[in-house]
Length: 342
Image 1 (cartoon, rainbow, N blue to C red):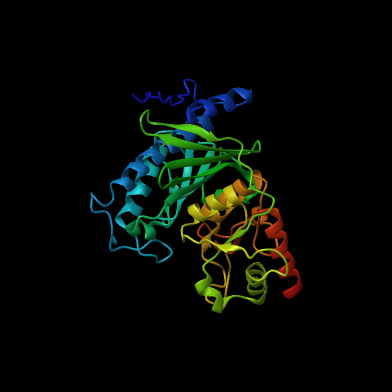
Image 2 (cartoon, rainbow, N blue to C red):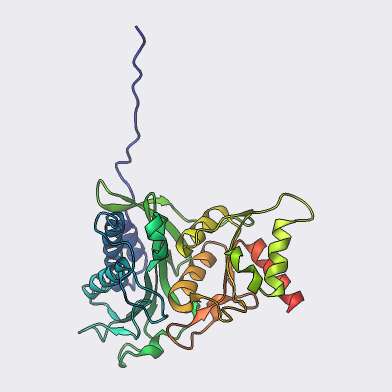
């Protein structure tokens, strides 16, 4: 009779949850008042809620279009509107946010009774939602700033700040698992994975670091007809290198998915300005700056081809910008192409 082998599945009886990690960071900062902790707990709740809605989208008939448009003129899906409401309602209860900017809101949204809050937040409640009908990973992106003067009335001017002033940024990706990547100003990038059995995010990728060099480029090559000479030259150089193997092309069309892969495997993510979209397509305040902040803290670089993206100051809350995020080697090669061809 064959022996029966016992299979032991290791169980961590002392996992580092997102809540625990946030509290540990707060204790390390003696001047912390707990405001940021409450905001991050509200974001965590929103991400759990949105994750659940995304998984029920097909059953709950949330596919298709809602018949409305956002401020950029893009058709909204029902799930865009739901995700936006979830984030706003979750953040209201923190009572620490004075105002917010969302991709789905035309103007800044001032929180009732929280005008004296020290923080403001900008977010894309559901990036890549056009992919949800085909079951592709999508996500949420956010960045938090401290108000320059919490005693003054909050206004859109409070949001017109560069990315170096961000206190905290992150994104949540809803795919085969739900993962929340959080970057704080102290130079730490951690990835937490939602464990549905206990209902909490568990630290699975501590201190994420992007490889110095990768072998993947990510761009919508269908727009190559409209590219400028610099981006055309760079893409041609990674497809037809003088030595070594050509790069692999991987493009999902959801910024969260494409940047997440770039952080893990290295390479470069690109959404350039071109003759069709001379100012780029991605929104600076709640897509480009948060992702650039995360990438730099993970050891990567982010540029518009000519200057560091985090140094860009938005002129209005829904401003667009070209965006290149990736490993230091690929970004330096791209910048060299722009320096020589423009």
